[in-house]
Image (cartoon, rainbow, N blue to C red; front, side, top):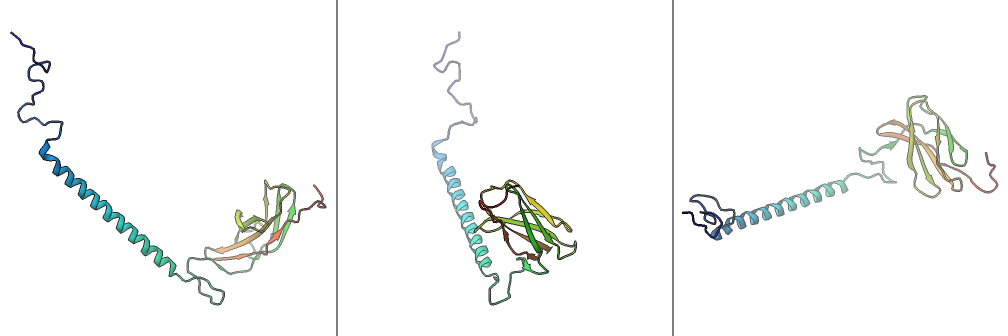
Length: 177
C-alpha cells in the first residue's frame, strides 16, 4: 500500500545522492566571498589606472604651446590667420532676416564660414558657403535686437582669415521694408 509522506510524494524534500542543491551549503561561503573581494580589488585597480591616465593626458595638454601676444608660437592643431580676409562686408537689414555680401579675396578658391552673435556676445558659426559664393541670408531674427556678423575665409584646415565685424543698427528711425 502507498503511504503519503509529509513532503507530498515519496522522496520529496530529500536530495538524490550526488544531486546539486539550489541552496548554498554552509561551509561554501568563503569561496564566493573570495571572488567578491577579488572583483572589488580589480575594479579599484582599474579605477586608479583610469584616473592616472586622465591626469597624464591633462598634464600633457597643459604643456602644449599657446599663442601669445608677444610670441608667434601656436599649437600645430590651431588654425592661424593667413591669406587675405573677406572685404567690404555689407549688411542688408530686413527686420527678421539680414542679407550679407562681401568681396572674395581668394577669387573662388576659398570657402566661407558666416559667424553671428547679438551685439556684445561672442560670434559663433551660423552657416557656410562654398568657393565663389559671396552672399548669405540669415533668417529668423528678432527685429528688435541688433546682430553682429563676420565672414571667415577658409583657405585650408589650418589657414583662415576673418573680415571686419559689422553690426545692424536697428532703432526707431530705421525704415521698414
